[in-house]
Image 1 (cartoon, rainbow, N blue to C red):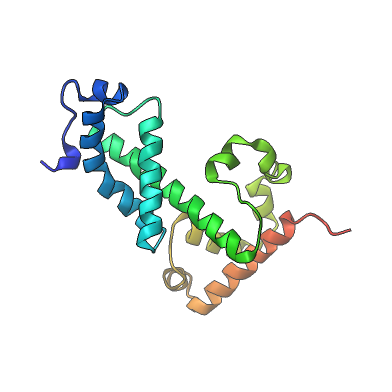
Image 2: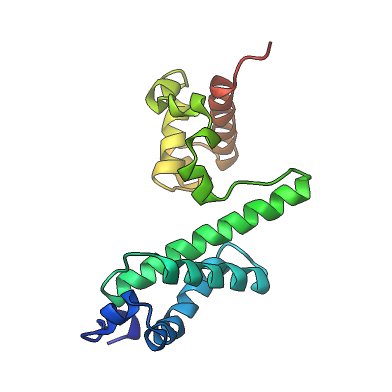
Length: 183
């Protein structure tokens, strides 16, 4: 049995919930590779991935309800680490662009004013209805089914470059539909 499939010891979950130091040291030892790997998938610089991983573990330790099994705790750790990595990446990219402060993913979810009200009212089906049926199909196969342009091209008897062109034009049409009209 792998370490990640091992259940908690009988009182381990209670000790974690009570924020007992020895329990968290053991959990940290087992969860650090998970957090680092998850953050490293998004952030290529080791130092940034370590920052995101340590932030994720700190957030996990400060959280209120913890899962009762190792697999669930590892999954939660990976999700938090990815979110911290994405927030760091967004902040770094905003700094490169010269933009001001960026909101973290948590702030975007917790502050409804931060999200555009116009996007909340969008109905994807309505937007897609105005797009050519071939392009609708290409969008679905690419974004929903996860197929590459080569796979879509072979299924639809199109060249991969043609598929990419249709995909680009469909996305441009969607962007044009959701952009507010310029005065």
